[in-house]
Image: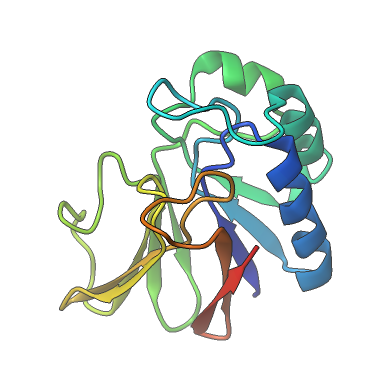
Length: 170
């Protein structure tokens, strides 16, 4: 199974459109979104092309392909706009080689991981910083932010496929 992983769209229709173009080109089985889809949050400036209704419409159009976890900016009103569940705290996947624990990163993260079997992958967003780190018993991956990257990291996403992964710039 091929899974595209992205995070922290924060209501940017401009950047979400770019993500949808890559989604079409990559042709994954699923798009896993690690939260913070529609709202920019009080700590962030408005992202380029801020239009949460447009983001909701783009994501609703591919709702049958989406897996999603709740970010710290998601609220019940966001769920009312979306045709797919966004309020789960985490999602556990298996790629045949690894258990993958996907969460936003504001509750569980690299420095506060959940109990994971050895060799697992912890997928998080939240920090807006791309990461690929060996943490001893697990690997920590973060695709960074689609719309508001931080610490000089690029906008991007991750592709999980055949037990491996690759980072791509958006």
